[in-house]
Length: 282
Ligand SMILES: Nc1nc2c(ncn2[C@@H]2O[C@H](COP(=O)(O)OP(=O)(O)O)[C@@H](O)[C@H]2O)c(=O)[nH]1
Ligand SMILES: [Mg+2]
Image (tube, rainbow, N blue to C red):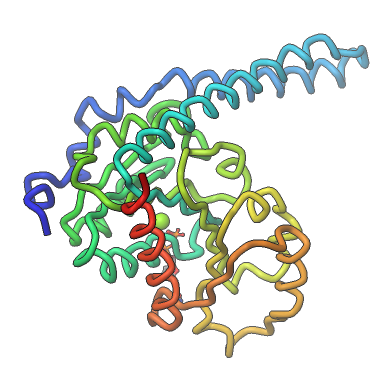
């Protein structure tokens, strides 16, 4: 383990709450998005009350939304370029709340930290609980609490870029981003990562790839988690596989239990191979 990963380099969660870093995470984006939501709800009210067409306003709002997505895309390209230059592999991990992202990251970091230099960006609407759970690994962790600037339900690439700038990028091989827990908004906002992993736990049912196709369609990999619970469930694996095939026939699938460790080896190998490939890239 390099000197860059000693106790002093850890971004301790306690510092995020009072430090200036979280305040510099581009508050404009959060507020802008909130304004759009406000505008959309007032638009709906106008429609019901007057019955008049609001097509003009609608077009204007969509243009603003496109601007946000466009500016996110541009910042994602910058993140991609930076990671390419520094040969760092980055994972955007997404899922519903409670499907096991932090538990999985705990296991992954435990399995990878002796061979690779890892940093984590934790996204939550509120609390530093996940960063605190991972602090024992003594690696750099940055927690983004979106509640401080609008409570966004996803992370944006410009915020990730600001976090990356806080890390010692010359001494990193892997960055894991734990996105905010939901299967909707994070799918819309690319972060400039190398791999999008969606975690689905068996307790969420077989229908989620059909109900949230964009999330599964834009992901490279699906981790089917909590397989230790299968004996207790009436789970239809064929139905899940049909649904996932419809949403994204090319998605890579790992079945595992982040709790017991069953099935973890294949995922650890997959990520290790990808980190090695990135490190060898020119
Ligand atoms: N049985 C079982 N429970 C799990 C597994 N992975 C996570 N959990 C539990 O699911 C709950 C939510 O996990 P967490 O990692 O916080 O999910 P997150 O919200 O996606 O980060 C916790 O109580 C975990 O202990 C698993 O593979 N099997
Ligand atoms: Mg979590």
